[in-house]
Length: 455
Image (cartoon, rainbow, N blue to C red; front, top):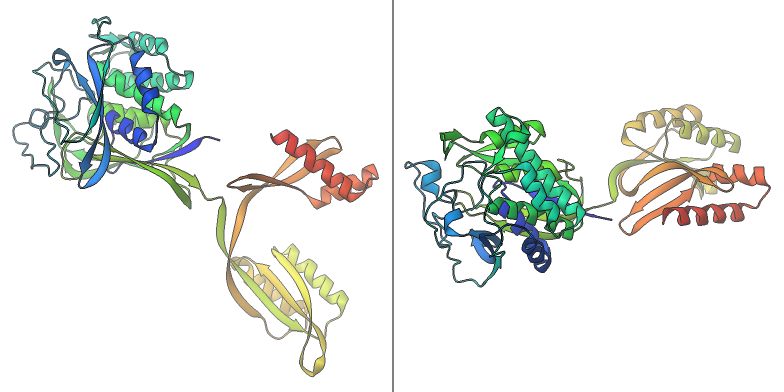
């Protein structure tokens, strides 16, 4: 069975934040580096380190480009205009931030060196001698790079889907078609590295279900080649609209969701609803590079749904010493037909040593009135005790299964350790009569065939 990933995007999401969070969850760094070495792109190296975000330890994943491929996207004053006044970050991270292109144009400028706050970090150089003609790639160029990479088919499909989603959003924003879009911004080296890294790490962690309830976004404007653009930028807006992503706009002045981040969510999200009850198995925190009023980090959690439900039930009790066995048998039938979960009698002795029965009825809260009316109407009791109780039940479903003896209804119960199968009593007895076989033989034969089929 695959793992379930929950993304808590209270500070938005970007490609490098996602990679860092997955690495912090336990994705194999060596497998990732081998995958990146197989990419037919050059001009980059990756750095993985530990940083502090508001005192919280987090993983940082950085794609460092050669100077001629660098961009202004991490420069807060450039992105948000001269009016942006950045407070000093207590971790010492300021002004020079994230390499991801966020769907904006790629600018060349002098390379800024990144400091890592005295922490040890791992620097990996890639593909020094490969082809340098990576400017203005179209979608087919990028898909060709991904297809030739030494990564799993599942990782390739995930990376391709992310790029297709970005391409569709950019085509819509520019009023063109997907095959005419030139991926200067998202096709840049760092974006290819981020997206392929996300796909490889997801595959390495065996992620099958991804839950993302909401994406938090900032407000204001961000600079691109054509001037100041409103937040969320057009590509993010288009992705959110096309893939029904839930956005929550905060008072933070700045861009929290990048087009790559939005495309990742759109490509991998399977649900926006968390289980009612779940257990957190592991937590990973990925650091962002920009400095806003809220700490820039993405929290990713591996979770496991608790396969038990807690529901309230009502127990009704009444002591009866002057009803016949026939009457009590009829009352039980009436109660079950009305929806009682269980009905039973316990022999008791009442005052004056009278033999009697305690009637017990288990029912849902909404059925109490119906049950009480049946008990009062059909028996001689003049009082009913009522107790509200909590119960824990396993998730279950009834399925029809084929066996060598015929069709059987089977109750399937789910546990964290696996599934259990219980053939329905009425089906077993029916087959016993039809095949003229003992109950135990029929039951065990059905159980054996069900187990073999479910493996």
